[in-house]
Image (cartoon, rainbow, N blue to C red; front, top):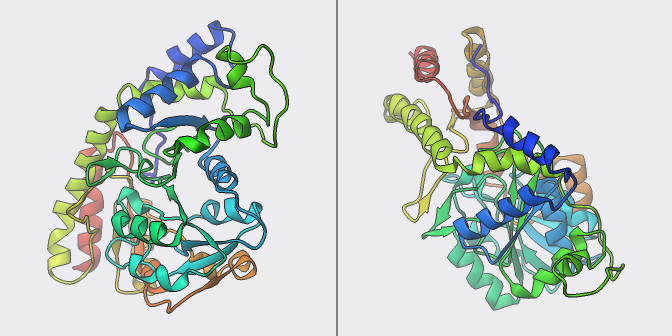
Length: 375
């Protein structure tokens, strides 16, 4: 059986984890954590990067740094994972969902302005499948209405928009290093801080409300509790696992792009015949091959194709159920405008096996199974 996902593993991870143990520094903000932070800052030209316990934790920190208060509103797509929403709900926000673009599955930038009210505080673009939202338009809207922009770039590590790394374009950016992502530390994430005004507050938040980061830098002679916060620091052993992968980031990226391109090439005839639709990558975007999806005619055809793939040795899955149709989505938010694409495109989308080290023979087998289904 060809699995849907395998966590990325290079073989060098155990040596780095052992080094973390030998350092006798396995808690948060150890040497490997700092090295990962510096790597993210240098590679992506981020002003400040802080590893977190998860992508969800990074989003929670972002909500607090934006000063969200009960009754404030945030605008986001309904087609996203629950973390995007719940991080802001925890801070007291009301959710305002808008429709997506069918070509990229990203938030439709032309629908955002109609959803803005005097209570709106933040726009949350989600870069689906590592393909960037139309950020110029979103930033213009944010500037016009004095709003913050928090990028949910959980799937976007190594992707760019007009040459800029995803996560470094808005006020704050959030990465995920979950085992399903291109680069993993098991559970983990990172907050990218692009507005210097947030840097000190972010350190306090992440250090349980203390100014311990200043103490370690020698800026204060002792550290103390100065504000609210939580424990958002990952173990240095987790960071050691991630460090091994960041050392080979290009190798992993190229391997995934090879698989993505093979799928695209092999399935293009079916797309040309009108049997399926394939992903669209706008000219201003480079993507990281986080996933490969196709779109069937409808939900019934998708279910049949999933069953057909499983019967012939390959696991494929559908993705998000739109949040606005979920019990929590109805409780904490509302959909503004027409749901012209969110539900329909969600019902059609099917994700194929995609992971580092996917064999070419397995890629060809998946392509053959799908071709046989439509033949």
